[in-house]
Image 1 (cartoon, rainbow, N blue to C red):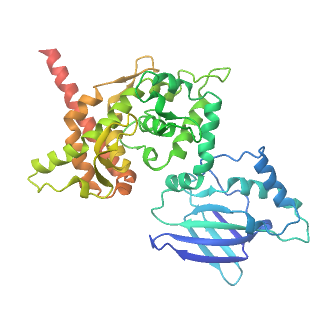
Image 2 (tube, rainbow, N blue to C red):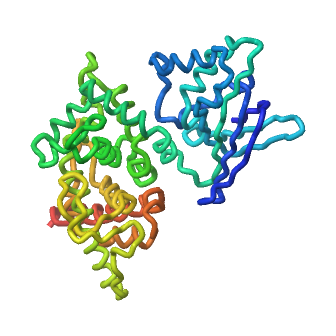
Image 3 (cartoon, helix red, strand yellow):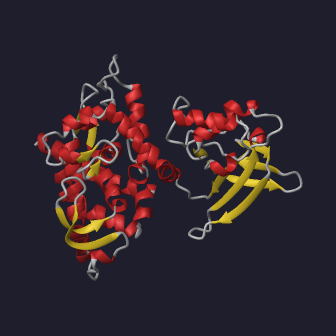
Length: 403
């Protein structure tokens, strides 16, 4: 998809932290802003019924010409940007993948302009700022999460007010961390936001991520994407009166194994240093200090596990933990009725068997937590390690039954 339109001014800046990323700051007259720019990459749908949205609509149609000064503008992720300096026309290439390219933030601003620009007084010119990112390796999920954090938290709080986390609360009510989960903004005394539980369930969403080919990297990179998936599942699968999730809701099914998911995640947090040392010793390598790895900090018992807040010696980035944790999705399957979930083998016992191989593969693949958490091939190869051991155990079981 390409959009060509006349602009007023453009400035180009290369990122000092990553020269492969270029940001184009473009000021465009609202009347020239093209319609039909996709917004699928934005985790939030514009709600124009709020007071804030009404103020936006009024700001577009009003007589004040300083919209581009007071408004943050629109953030767009694009494949390329080209300017014809002779005509002042920009060619914005948005590619064919609307999950990667389009409006990342500022969806309400864009909708307000589209809805009200025809009412702008004829003697007034109003401008809006576009901030367009172009980069081959830009992570849309991470960018969307960073740009939408404040409102996304409020969205989660709203879901709590509507009792749409009740089945999660019940699933962990008897767990030691049951009272530590924050379901609303500024939840005093709570140590862990509910978004962390949603990430664990998202990583095991076997309806969406059925095998090694598709991987749930957003469980590391973006809580906004995770919440969007949770909300969509609720919208698609709930009881007739809208008060509860239906049995087809994968998150309802996953809530029933949530205590196991939490136990597995924390077990990986606790054991990863020992698994790292074990694989290096087995390979005959010098035992380097685990705490020297980027994204790992030695805290000598002052670090804490994510949910139970158990003291541990190393604070390990989730970028390393999640690709290992997500690999155990290979052990989860639908029950015979298509609703319940079943473990082919106990994931905690499987961790004892394949944990060292998973840790070795993770640190041999990426020495940076950001790269580890976002590298699709790492998630895939870790999944296949667990899948391979599962297959071996199934064959072993089958041979035993035949004897």
